[in-house]
Image (tube, rainbow, N blue to C red; front, side, top):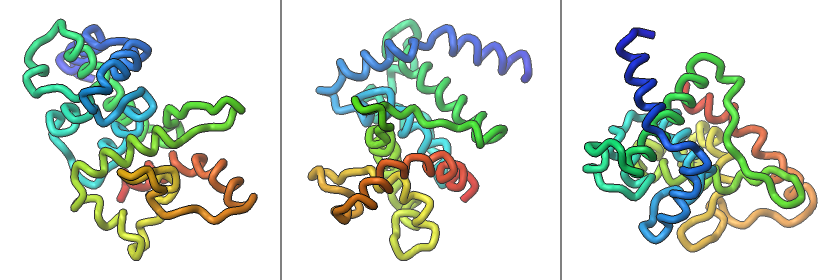
Length: 197
């Protein structure tokens, strides 16, 4: 890494708010309607930005993610700037992992009270980022496209604006419950495949 890049990275890290603080900050901003209301959703959203089919200007995805104005990028030392820096660090971390050691990519999933992984918030964050550039994501969202399968482990856990399962109601039965309980295990490989798409 060049000295200039290392300096920019270290100053970004110094300005970034810790992730636990970012979680609280997001929850306080719920009334502003950020794309992510918790760290898990934020992680899914950022993963979609990194793995997505098109590059997006940071202003175009960070502003809706955090529900901030573009002017927040110009004012260091503010909570908004600290949040921007934390998001940029997570973006860079995901990008680095997917570029160098993709098998080590792990979404920040929460756990349910029974200990099972709850992939829903992460997947909902990922899906929210796809809505920034729907035409770019259209081939992957098209059920008749063979590459639609790349998004299935994520879309299985998503809901539409009315709270209905995005892919329609799941079949009833134990096999479906078991499948849904374990489908999150395919998400890291799916994200890596999308990055290569």
